[in-house]
View 1 (cartoon, one colour):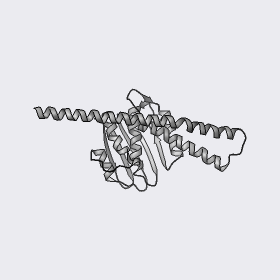
View 2 (view 1 turned 90 degrees about the horizontal axis):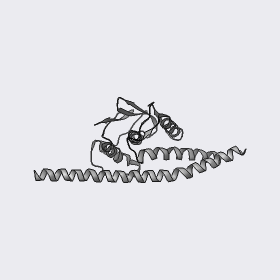
View 3 (view 1 turned 60 degrees about the vertical axis):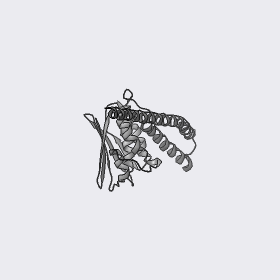
View 4 (view 1 turned 120 degrees about the vertical axis):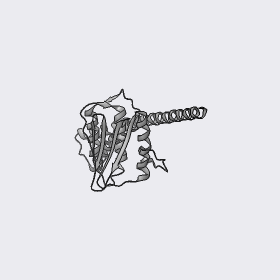
Length: 217
């Protein structure tokens, strides 16, 4: 009986430590994105004012404008994926469709938000982390769709060819993580955040498709 209580206590302490770490990561993510979005917006506004003043949009200015749009879309995406989230916060469908549209214009991925109603920011966070995981399976880009039906979320990716690094994808099933690169951190964050929000993560990959599903535990 004593051993069982000790094991339970350690388990609770471990879960608490994991939650504290996740909260700290989310705070750092929110802070970085918050501080970056303002100067990016200022640059974008400056380019627009130069264009409105009647000056010719040179190739250099056009490149700056496109780069600012791409960076802003990515930072807004990261702000939800890596930042703080709670089930009480809601994100509107129009905001998410606009975000995915901006992201699609500035990269090799086409992302389509196919959910009409506002959704809890916690679930949106999980869905966007799933998008980042699926992005690694599409080396040449591809098309992603995000849907939800009766509480089950499906984030699907298609391309003419997909790849699968099992050392990464097995982390979603609870496998121990080896050496993780910064571009792969989503594979650690998704299962951790899913546990926090009581969601199960499942995935599948074949030669041309990849999918991550989220469902209540």
